[in-house]
Structure formats: structure tokens, C-alpha cells
Length: 150
Image (tube, rainbow, N blue to C red):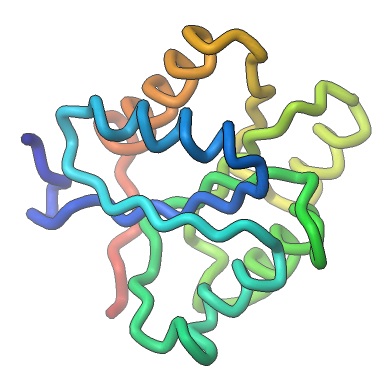
């Protein structure tokens, strides 16, 4: 297994409420040659609690990057994105929007909220796995991620 440049597994936060998409994403990361810790949150409000280490998340690790769905209960993905990018302690964490929406308004709103990229989820199983693997390859093999302060 390959580790990140700093020698630790990559910390990934997946914010997704669809159990099927969670399962597929976990499967794709499981097949990886890169060591990852994938933590799953299924609603926007809990994602913010996780990132701020509130309550039961007091010992949560800061993610190296976030995979964020737009259509979430309690707080939608764009609201979560805005909160992340307004927070000086979180704003440097790359946020990848992974959504079923191909609506231009959703795409524009995400980039206006400073998403690092927007990817539409394919409906085909094989293509979905390929997309997740390409995200992983780009964000964990190619990109220099910001150093963690803690």
C-alpha cells in the first residue's frame, strides 16, 4: 500500500446520504493502492459538526479532502460548502462536489461557493467506480494537498 507523502493514510470525509453511493464509493477506495481512512456522514448538519469536532466528533481527524453531495438532509451541500469555505480553519480543505445533478445552476453555485471541482455521478456501476478512482488518483497521487496544522 502507498501512503501519502507525509506517511499517514489519507483522511477522506464522504458526505453522502444515498446508501448505494456510499457503498460504491467505499468499494472503489477499498480497491485502492493508497491507504485511506474514509469517514462517512449522511447529512449536512452532521458534516459541519464533524468538521468542527463538536460532540461525538471531538476526536475526529481533519480530512485531507471532502467528497460532498449536494442533496443532503438537514443542510444541503451548498450550505455545507459555504460554511467550510468561510471558516479560516477549514477553507483550505479541498471540496469535491460529487452529485447526480448536471444542472448548470447547481454547477455554477458550487463553483461560486469555491468548490475545488464538480463531478456528476454516473449512473452506471462501472463508470461510478472509475470516477471515484480518478478522484482518488488525482487528489491523492497528483495534487499537493495543504499540510495539516494539527
